Image (tube, rainbow, N blue to C red):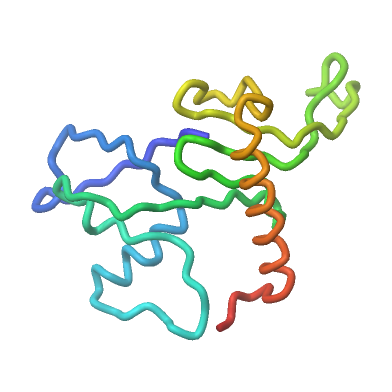
Length: 153
């Protein structure tokens, strides 16, 4: 997924600048808290990373792993240049857009986003240890979410 994120703040953000680092919507909450000088709540887990250090060209802290949810389900995890997808539905048949095709579950997959940003080629056989590690990470996170669905500490 690549969705542009635009920001304007003449005193802090350089006009015409481009930042290629990953930004996720959940980063907005810690960013706003930091800008307002409000401490983050300590009674729950806060996902996301403040973007404030990046305004004006600063370094962003490491953000591994990044979790991807779809309709309340944890579907994928990104760690560095790799992204692991658990199985999900893909269209099979013609044309799936009109409801005439069949949806089938496929996966899991491992993609090397450095070489394949479109997530087109599964590299799980070339990187079996990474594939195994990220699959285990995803399952552990799913269990963590099941055990504590609201993220309270």
